[in-house]
Length: 441
Ligand code: NIG
Ligand code: FE
Image 1 (cartoon, helix red, strand yellow):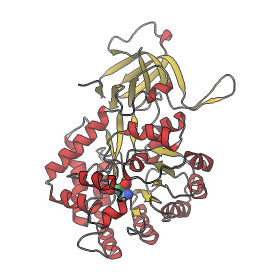
Image 2 (cartoon, helix red, strand yellow; image 1 turned 45 degrees about the horizontal axis):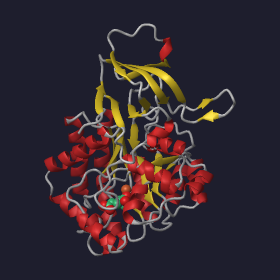
Image 3 (cartoon, protein in one colour; image 1 turned 90 degrees about the vertical axis):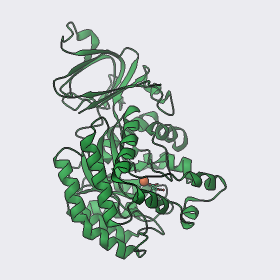
Image 4 (cartoon, helix red, strand yellow; image 1 turned 120 degrees about the vertical axis):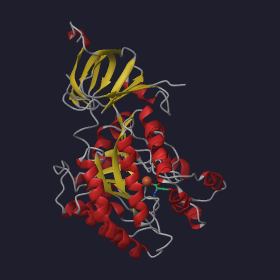
């Protein structure tokens, strides 16, 4: 049964969200008593949207005359906030790894399962065997499920290719699917070629050489799709971890990507303090990146997982404007430790929260469960969690200018859940309370 409606707000259309009980703009506001309301909470508000842009956010009582051309939507019973952003997602794959759930239940770890031929390699086999149309259908199904739950901007990592040619095919599938179908979240594409060992080229350095050779072509295709407006942004990523890629290999891949004007992310410090966050810091520092990033591309955006990153590692990321992403669904499924919000808070780093949806370590395409676990298992506060899937997730994808807040002049990416207080964000751990998703198109 459908319990939410998806509205694509495009040109020549106007909408009035009337008398919203509570609006979290995510623009921090100083209160009369001097305290800061980080959520930018407003009460009894009308939001007017024209041509996919928010044109006014005002107290409902100021509205003597309702614009006649606007479709009026009653928001009296709604908590409204910016559309959600899932900033770390692996949605282009085929097949499943259900058998691993049974193995995990018997006590095998993610690394032990990978050593027995499971893991990323297994998903790569089924993804390689899938046709372009099957991959596109799968990708769009995942993207549309996310949109129905309120996700207006979603990361889309490749990474199940494990060869340069397959990586190219998967990137093209993402772009082609986005061109064909507009009822989906906006997409930020991420090239995760160096995700695990290639079956044909088991030597990691040699495999990386083949990916580096292909990178100019990959980045041209991705950057062209950004210029055309098909993608929101284009980035590269690498899995830096024992038995996967080393710090040095990470540095080579990420530097090459930055030189091609791609943004970069790092899968880092997930099973051990692998040095991924250190590399991100040193690359950002070498490029003189500051907490308020000015560039529009070639940025070190985020370091993700970070279970084993120290407070000092995270503080360094804060000093150069790199966001750290907590991915608690991976801990939930794979039995690895949850991150400790106390350490992240003390470090001052900007925190994003994402699903890490993928067929193995987190087969959960549900940003709400990530939020729930971030609150209840990691210890992040309500404000931190909501910022983590709105404005901070926008920073993690380098999309802070277009997404993550409800602001006059910004695109109308808006979510409504049933409720009238910020706490109602947590009314359901799976998003059953989503009532309306507006995505500017
Ligand atoms: O983010 N850590 C590496 N990559 C993915 C796992 C992918 C998989 O298990 O298929 C992750 O958890
Ligand atoms: Fe991941």
